[in-house]
Length: 305
Image 1 (tube, rainbow, N blue to C red):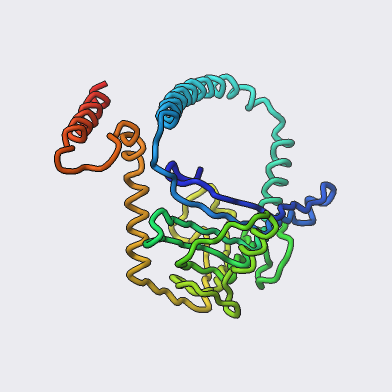
Image 2: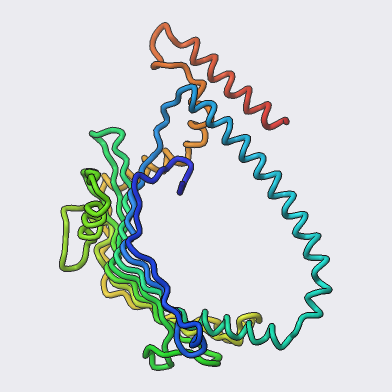
């Protein structure tokens, strides 16, 4: 899960591919392509039954066991590292230098292409005051260039140039949730075809209208492991074609509502299982006062334990 209070209703990735030539790693870049990333998330239901209470207790126990295991693993790793220090000094320095240069060359020249990303968050527990936010962009690319910002393969240069380009990035709010299609293909088609662009608009309230961002980076490799206050390690030239930001009362109210839900989710998740059923009413307050007292008492015990 992205957050303890959030779950993914549906998520799909259309295609992931890596193009590389094992015999030409020194002369051709590694190209990573990702296409059609679509995801819809929503808040978890806070309704609890006996099975949910047992499930939460099991999660807490598992979390404590993981913490203990991680602590033991970290101590074992420290001991193992101390034993390996002498062995590392005896390794072949030439072989290490060759591999380090090869890895650096691959990283300096890796190309990344991401197309059609659409992520929505929908909270319609209250149909009269539903909240829907979305983030989308049509493409994201990153590649190495020469000093003239033309695509090129970087070889043993102290100054690495890269161009990052983000096209049709937008943030929006919507009134209606997406009706979940019956098939994965239809879900992917709807999500990718509703990515807003400058020429393709949809009935949504934009927080940020589709914009294209271009970033040119000049990275000084000589300063990778040193600090020099006289010259920058990275120079960046940022170009943004337009910036239209709009907020409405509905956007602000919805954002604050979700922020309050997630910030208090831990408290709700902790105490909701023992909360008396029903609502507080005249003549029926004693069970809720008893429940609140027990919650405070449990907190005090946890702090003192």
